[in-house]
Length: 302
Ligand SMILES: [Zn+2]
Image (cartoon, rainbow, N blue to C red; front, side, top):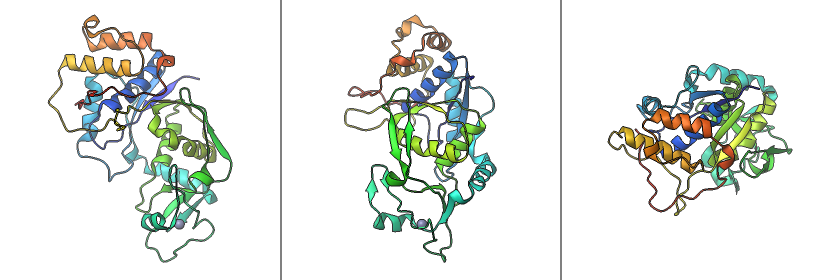
């Protein structure tokens, strides 16, 4: 099958170094396989969108020389497709009136947050509630994730997460549903993303099964963790970075991903770096875990 990969940033701020690592990893996996690389803006949660960050993300990717195929897909324009998918789940989905506040008080917390005890599965807990979410009924079979880099993950969703939300009470569709419907719509064969998203994968595979979709292949590269245990985060705007700084940044993403790129003086343009990277990309060199050295640069990329 023809390789189709994607990069799917959520516009909650400008791209930071951690997001460029995700862009580089997914880009080079696709391009070195002669495949397509699609760009999807994950603006499904309209309350989390930061003003101007969609333009900022697109401009940044362009200025760093990433070249996406096909039109950009915006989750904010996909509500009908998500609703169709939800409708097709039929009795596998059900309304739930439990509020977050109520659950936080009532419910034990597991590895993946609170475990929903399926209060509303057979009977809605509060018929007078002004609004309700939609949950997906789970069962006690284990979902296995075979990952190209990470140890296999096995999750009993019913026991470890519980029936989970696919449409929120504020009528926003959940991240899990949107991602799965979009990956199917865009014929994505390979999901390459940070290992902080690994925990979501069993739920997404279960949704793919419920919707009778193709299952994707997965590669979760290590999320950059600083020595004090913090993730690389979004930072404030810094002044416009110059061309040499851009070449350096791309080389840093390559080295983070274990690619042993030559030093910057071997490349006169960004295009040279990309040509080298596509030709020499080796996903087997990506480390499964990674801690950053002290004082690792975590500058803004815009
Ligand atoms: Zn409920």
